[in-house]
Amino acid sequence: MNARNNVKKPFNQSSAARLVLAVARRRFAAQVDFFVARWLERCATKVEAAQRLLKTDQKPSRAFGMGVSLVVSSPRWDQSP
Image 1 (cartoon, rainbow, N blue to C red):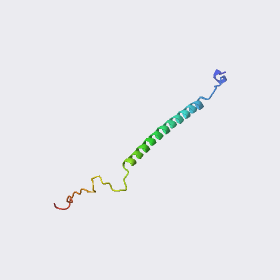
Image 2: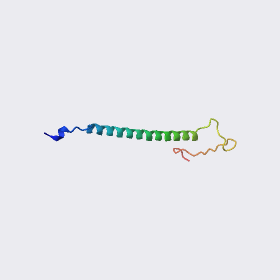
Image 3: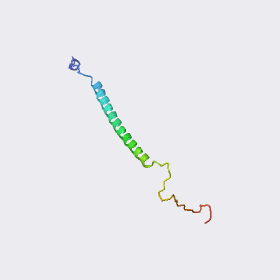
Image 4: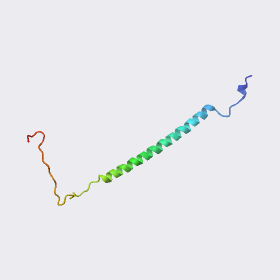
Protein backbone atom coordinates (compact mmCIF):
# COMPACT_ATOMS: atom_id res chain seq x y z
CA MET A 1 0.00 0.00 0.00
CA ASN A 2 1.26 3.41 -0.93
CA ALA A 3 1.43 5.89 1.97
CA ARG A 4 1.12 8.91 -0.30
CA ASN A 5 -2.44 8.00 -1.26
CA ASN A 6 -3.61 8.06 2.36
CA VAL A 7 -2.54 11.67 2.98
CA LYS A 8 -4.95 14.27 1.66
CA LYS A 9 -3.69 17.73 0.91
CA PRO A 10 -5.49 20.56 2.73
CA PHE A 11 -5.80 22.56 -0.50
CA ASN A 12 -5.06 22.22 -4.15
CA GLN A 13 -1.70 23.82 -4.89
CA SER A 14 -2.57 24.74 -8.44
CA SER A 15 -5.67 26.66 -7.35
CA ALA A 16 -3.64 28.43 -4.66
CA ALA A 17 -1.05 29.42 -7.25
CA ARG A 18 -3.81 30.74 -9.51
CA LEU A 19 -5.24 32.71 -6.61
CA VAL A 20 -1.86 34.27 -5.80
CA LEU A 21 -1.38 35.12 -9.48
CA ALA A 22 -4.86 36.68 -9.70
CA VAL A 23 -4.17 38.82 -6.61
CA ALA A 24 -0.84 39.93 -8.07
CA ARG A 25 -2.52 40.86 -11.37
CA ARG A 26 -5.18 42.91 -9.59
CA ARG A 27 -2.58 44.70 -7.50
CA PHE A 28 -0.51 45.46 -10.61
CA ALA A 29 -3.59 46.71 -12.47
CA ALA A 30 -4.47 48.97 -9.54
CA GLN A 31 -0.97 50.45 -9.52
CA VAL A 32 -1.08 51.05 -13.27
CA ASP A 33 -4.48 52.74 -12.92
CA PHE A 34 -3.13 54.97 -10.15
CA PHE A 35 -0.08 56.04 -12.15
CA VAL A 36 -2.11 56.68 -15.32
CA ALA A 37 -4.65 58.75 -13.40
CA ARG A 38 -1.86 60.81 -11.85
CA TRP A 39 -0.21 61.30 -15.26
CA LEU A 40 -3.52 62.40 -16.83
CA GLU A 41 -4.08 64.86 -14.01
CA ARG A 42 -0.64 66.40 -14.58
CA CYS A 43 -1.32 66.62 -18.33
CA ALA A 44 -4.66 68.36 -17.72
CA THR A 45 -2.99 70.84 -15.37
CA LYS A 46 -0.34 71.63 -17.98
CA VAL A 47 -2.98 72.09 -20.69
CA GLU A 48 -4.98 74.47 -18.51
CA ALA A 49 -1.83 76.49 -17.74
CA ALA A 50 -0.93 76.66 -21.43
CA GLN A 51 -4.44 77.78 -22.35
CA ARG A 52 -4.29 80.56 -19.78
CA LEU A 53 -0.86 81.58 -21.05
CA LEU A 54 -1.81 81.62 -24.72
CA LYS A 55 -5.27 83.08 -24.27
CA THR A 56 -5.80 85.74 -26.94
CA ASP A 57 -7.43 89.04 -26.19
CA GLN A 58 -10.41 90.11 -28.26
CA LYS A 59 -9.22 93.74 -28.37
CA PRO A 60 -6.03 94.70 -30.18
CA SER A 61 -3.32 95.62 -27.77
CA ARG A 62 -1.56 98.94 -27.92
CA ALA A 63 1.73 97.90 -26.46
CA PHE A 64 3.67 100.46 -28.52
CA GLY A 65 1.70 103.52 -27.52
CA MET A 66 -0.71 104.91 -30.11
CA GLY A 67 -1.17 101.76 -32.17
CA VAL A 68 1.93 102.23 -34.27
CA SER A 69 3.07 99.05 -35.90
CA LEU A 70 6.41 98.42 -37.49
CA VAL A 71 6.32 97.06 -41.01
CA VAL A 72 9.48 95.74 -42.56
CA SER A 73 9.36 95.29 -46.29
CA SER A 74 11.75 92.91 -47.94
CA PRO A 75 11.75 91.69 -51.52
CA ARG A 76 10.32 88.29 -52.21
CA TRP A 77 12.66 85.56 -53.26
CA ASP A 78 11.40 85.64 -56.84
CA GLN A 79 11.80 89.41 -57.29
CA SER A 80 15.03 91.21 -57.98
CA PRO A 81 16.08 93.80 -55.36
